Length: 276
Image (cartoon, rainbow, N blue to C red):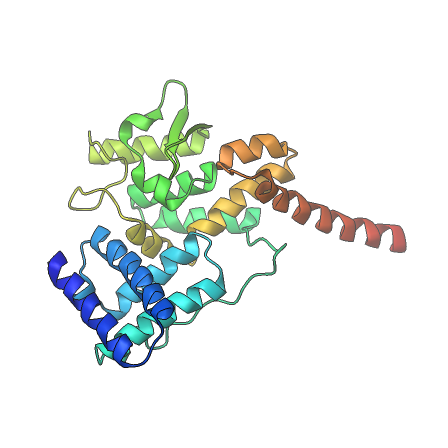
């Protein structure tokens, strides 16, 4: 199967050369298509069999990783050209790239929106999905980190979860009582497993599966992560602590949440000074 996909890429690159594309362009297309292929294979799919949903799922996963709209547009352009080569333009039909959020603007949920989301998820009566939403909202971990969690990473005696980032660095995050309750109920249902979050066929959940589940509730993991950080900052938690809990390598990333809070505070003070 893998050889077949590699042959498909090679034939596509030869087609690009015939179309008069430069060597640099062909090299870029090869790199991006290889990344797409690796993502597909991690989700048990092959490049030659891609569907419209596969492309949407890939672009969504890149959005969750924080790729800029400009970068996403270029990647979608590569896949669109590949779809043209396959004579299957439907693969990329009507897939839009979200407009960039202003640099200092952070999309997070208000307290009321958090309560509404949790209420909606609980109504689904799916213990796994309830535990996932609580985990993302109350720990701020990334989807990739969530999918990599094992049952042994959760310590109910000390009420913490040990999380590994993409570099293998670990951080320990305390668990809220609500999250402990949600996890306990979920684990009572699934029994003893290695992976913490599993599919109906008892396989470790993929990032794509989590993203699609969240989409049903009109939210994404990045917004839940932003909400976690913003709520901590709003409660006066120091930048250093928030940075460590969120696993930020650069504290300037954390400072964005503080800046957002300061701007709102300045607006409120300006009104009160002027009209009180």
